[in-house]
Length: 304
Image (cartoon, rainbow, N blue to C red; front, side, top):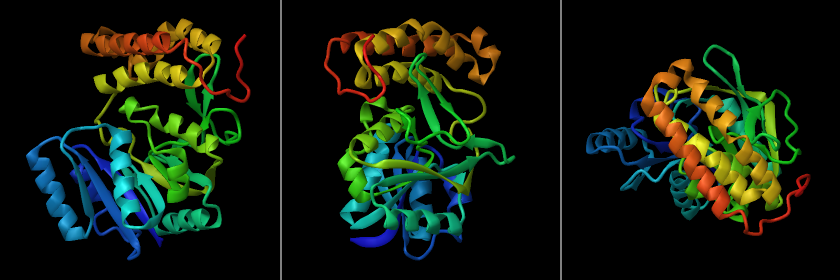
């Protein structure tokens, strides 16, 4: 196995962010290889990315269509593993890192290949953005909390920046492409734990996330649709029937909460309202159609 670390970035029209955060970056050490997965947006974007990658010595993995974040990450990791990389770092185009953080993450993986680890993530202003995540099993709401217990049922790490070994990746099976966008990191965290892995937030390590850098200001219709949909898709895949029914009952208020994350003006913008309604309806269909299927027992969760 190659002891160097493979860095996987999924690109969707973000070559300018890649140029800003990754081109000539001092933290991209000589034994770190960057794999950029291009979820196709346009020929011009692919050309710009290919030119940048050629100048920087990056590897481009092309997808002929936009397959979503999870499936895109799967393509990048597959390319890295094919080249023998043992350590993997998944990172967003709008995240800035330092060489010290990269080195510490790699050392962490070397010491415990069955651990998936994330640094503390802050915004450019220094505001805490991620320090561990938990799923509220009563309402079906994801939340982040400083010092969240990563041993709790349905703890999760953000896909914005996480590191793990190729061994753990194989055991967990990679991301579930059905989510397309959002909640796939929550799902993957559960499968890591089910595969015998553990989750860790390194509070002594910090990266900067330019939140929304890949989608612009505010919340997009795509954000609203997939967040409302995937909340219930996750429930259908992981939770007992009674808990799924509880999440269904909470759907109107939770979808409303997602809708107003970008501001209350979303309430008077029909494309935004329509996206939230469409996502909710798709999630409800998934939850109800799979409601009779047997799912694996979940520690700390039971049918009432």
